[in-house]
Image 1: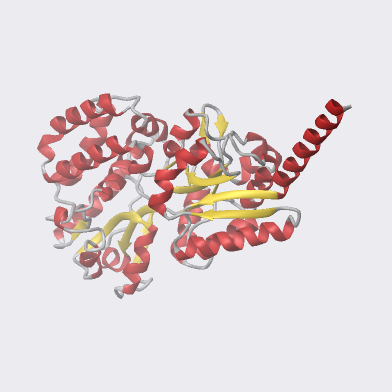
Image 2: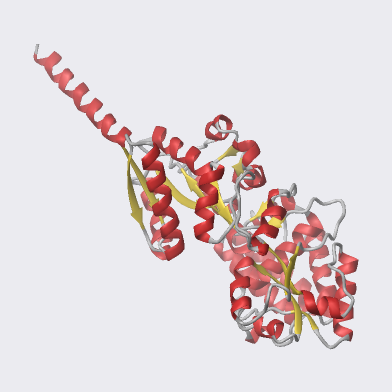
Length: 409
């Protein structure tokens, strides 16, 4: 009798605990900046309105605190959902068994089609590991009025790009501005040159440490870069400028192009450039046999493997993936939805980025310092900056990076 009563109490307790889990959804994020915070507040409110039986408990971290905490909380006291990033940035948590595959969520909600542009960057070992909800484009921002004054059409291939640069040089205009004082800007240039020379799969394999830096295909990428350096295409003394300081030559009409992310548009407008003066184009094709991959850092949400309430977590991911929800989030963020049926505002640069990214078939890279581990990313970008100043050191730099690869992975 005692055993039956005891077992009944245990069963009741277990059922109560399960019921508590079913009603509470714990989300950890580092979306503490004003726009992301507002976007998540609205996201959670909308989800709770449609799912009145679920109460969301939201733990908000600052960026640095989150980076140092995520592995600990995924291991010890996992929430039901956690935000992170796509591509190789999620690889350590996938390899450690800390994220749950969510192929069933994609299958049940038609996400293989609606989120197709980011599927590659969410896939590791043939499984899908989360839901992406926002990204922004990189590409070439340029002075339309300077191009027009010099009879230059938007280049779509490598030869036309080099010809445009040569024409600008003849007119006394620096073809490409860049500030490499903080090294990450060099990563964007390298990524596009490598994606266009060798393609997405090669680029991902390189940043995963699977390919030597002395490989002839990496050398081909660097030689393409060297062509631009030897022709004097980049801003002189770029190592003295931050990325923001390097906007000034473009604003003043002394430089015509910038390989940069869409966050550059706001300061360019604030500095006085009008949308009649400023344009955007896709980084040109180099190798016609390589599909056109893009650079678009992608924010994601994942279900930790140790989550307690995976059922409601999957409901939340399905909600997050919806076209209308992604439209609303990204209106607040000023970025781009991934769902191809979402809408974007009438900002011409968001429109251009959305069209480009929604139609890419070559894959989406995350950016060199997200796709490569920290030690490799730091050494790589230091090497890229040195190469831009001293291109004759190319092989020495690649051999040095190869030594770092041997240690970093």
